Length: 431
Image (cartoon, rainbow, N blue to C red; front, side):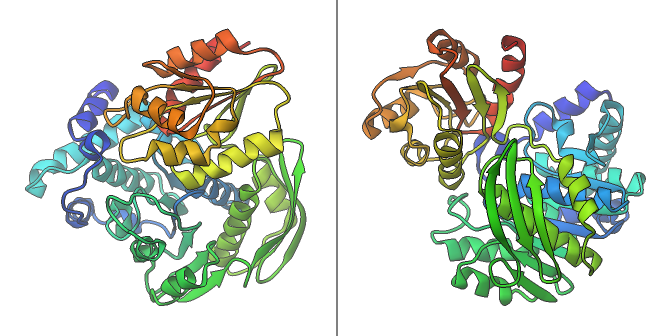
């Protein structure tokens, strides 16, 4: 199987990716694939990460902390921005094309033995476990794809189970309350798991306390951010864990929320090792942290930022960082595209789109992309002064560039699919 054939095989099995529907959630398929492969999901200890927002940033920080501690780290995340290889990394290096094709081919060979058709995420997850086993990683950092209990990644037995926060998302599969969503995410907790909870709501914390883990550490109660200041290129924070105070930690990511992700990550790695971390380990690890597509500055004069916020909670954080931390002096332009299943009015409200001078609505480049006209109608209902409608992300960026001056600022957001298309186009467009 070639790399292109592997991509085609995945595309043929892309159900949820195209429809947004999961008809009968089950771990049967991924369990059968893992059984046929000799249970590679147990080849190394696991840090398993769920939550509504911040999973990707937290996974990156945990990975870097484990690497700085001398371990070989296999990390599995989703979705990807530009190439599916981004989902599979060892020591932050994406899987090579030939290795990717080899792993996907191995899963394809097993399909006939399963008696049914695996989905896209089942295939990717099984391939990740197989690759990590083949490469003999020391630890796996595994990000949940959807909720937790029935997610394909939940065949692992996590030594550390991390919950970043709980918000209202994926309401088509869980809800209607945050507590309902928390119960689904609590499904990743196993009897031996040290649970690290970034959410502070007492009702939510109690759900995780009752989930049967070996221990539970909760932000604000057991660990916290004591100081969180804007700094050049990110945040300067003082943090404390159950064992240690770490002063003046530079987190090279934008937004107050990244300090909370950082303390969750540090506490999770302390729990993994059952000991404090040396300050130079944290400095080395965070010095190498980067998150493409997560409030990423693509250009200056004009300021151009892409952010993968795809739900109202993430959009609210994105707006706060853009409008308050960056506080653009000139005109503010917004390019937005959303997926079906997201209420565009809620997304635009959270983004404070009515505070932008121009809102350019496009269709996210996905079979589940919400038509640009529907996004634009929501923008007009919100009271946005000037609203434009175009078909593609690239056309939206072109329209923005016709309007923008050197002191202005452009935010491109609403979906990781939008950001994934915007990044390569901007690299070609901007000096």
